[in-house]
Amino acid sequence: MGEHGHGDPNEPGAVIRAGEGDPGRYAIADPGLPPHRPRLADEDPQVAKRSERQVFVLFLLSIIGTITVFVAYFAIELTEDLQMLRLQNTLLGVGVALSMLGIGLGVVHWAKTLMPDHELVEARKPLRKESERQEAEKIVGDVLEESGIKRRPLIRNTLIGAVLLAPLPGIVMFRDLDQSDDFGVERMRHSLWDEGVRLVRDPTGTPIRAADMTVGSSMHVVPENLRDVPGHGDRLTEKAKAVVLLMRMNPDDIETVSEGREDWTYDGIIACSKVCTHVGCPVALYERHTHHLLCPCHQSTFDAANEFKVIFGPAGRPLPQLPISVDDEGYLVAQSDFTEPVGPTYWERGEK
Amino acid sequence: MKALSQRRRHPFAGVALLLLGLLITGGLYAAATTINEAQASSTEDYSSADVDEGERLFVANCATCHGINAEGTDNGPSLVGVGAASVDFQVGTGRMPMQMHGPQAQKKPPQFNDEQTMQLAAYVASLGAGPAVPDDEYLDVDQGDPARGGELFRINCAMCHNAAAAGGALTEGKFAPSLHGVEERHIYEAMTTGPQNMPVFSDANIPPEDKQDIIAFLKTYESQGTPGGFSLGSLGPVSEGLFLWTGGIAVIIASMVWLTSRSS
Image (cartoon, rainbow over all chains, first blue to last red; front, side, top):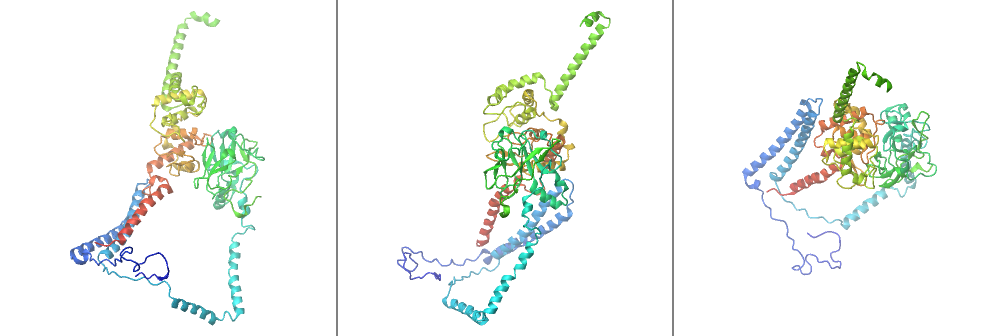
């Protein structure tokens, strides 16, 4: 008791310890262990019998729960409406909960009421003994000495060399999982948008006339050449980079147009990447009067009237704007690809 | 006119006059009844009496903020060209007249009855062309395709209104409301007019048939309910997290207390 193994009990200090000074005034007397009190079930066989019954009921509930799961899974016929599915889900949940909780509660109740309740005291061990420390040091010294690693530098150095070289094939193999020359950085830099590519509606794929966009409208847009991409997976990858939100606001409401971007909009129609520059969530919560675009993940807010400047939240850069114009037939087309990579920042992004 | 006056004593003049009179009264009656039907089925035509009555209501109830000629003031936008659909939505859902200024107008019990709402809509529609109250044919959810509507909803609406149409937060106190229990007509009108900060989904973007599909999806979803037990408002991590932090942690603490307590 009171032997903590660290800290010198004789060191000077103002702390009053048990047994020092005037114990009557400051120290709290060690109350020791409370006396062992037998449980009701230890003395009264009736109570023990009742506890046994309770544990039995809990285990029985577990069995019933498991049977319920089987009945719910196999006996319930699912129909067109969701009624039976809802019933099945509920019964599956209740059944699994009963089967697990029944076992758990039963075992604990059994241990608490019926199993022997010897109380054992295990005194705290000293954290470190000097003799043990010396023993461990000796073992390490012996190993170093006996292995001869100090006396034979040749094999020691070749071992270090071998260990250093061994992981290198892994690096090469993992690196070549990506077949491109530049870790695919170029692929992140470009999307399907290009000069003259029409803006089409997602999911119908129909092209959009400028007149279709009334003031205050917003449309979810993909490039027309997306449907030419073979393979579902590749198409999704390309779509993820190329998704665009198209908005039309009153042309007078556009506040900032920096140099070189004067003809990026068409009569108040403005297009931007839907991929948040923070961690890539789709930014599409558009408020047509405030011209705010809100990202639902971390509340980054972009101002469409000011070239999608970040006005709130963790995003570091404005959303990339897609330069648009109108082709001979009156449909909205892109003037070029995005002029910067879409989505979150990455190391190789650079300023190209 | 000369020819007419010369033939006014023609033997058939009386018959012709009678026929003309019958045609006019019959025609007027037919027009009047279709106008009455139109009020019920909510198409464009409003009588001038409706417009006049609507103007009286407007001046008394709306002009403080929207201006005496609905031209708009600092406190409220101009209503020229917003159309009857906008009025039917804003007034029909109780958002207008607005209870107080705030981030956005809140839904409340409608302050005008159906006829007054129609008259207000007639007046505002007479100020300038705008979206009309939708035809009933596009509000019949049995004719819509809920599966297609679901796809359109997830692309165009779900980012704000939540994939389960339970609504969600926007910036600076604004929010997209839950769409459960909203009348078909009001859902349609919200899409065509873009109330408050909602973008407009005009017929050129989402044609009436597609709007019908979206409404069919919402109504199907509403009637089916969720198959997965407690939906906790379908609000995602907000309500689920709150439930686990309060209910779940309470259960864990209770079981720890029980595990470590002595049996009596």
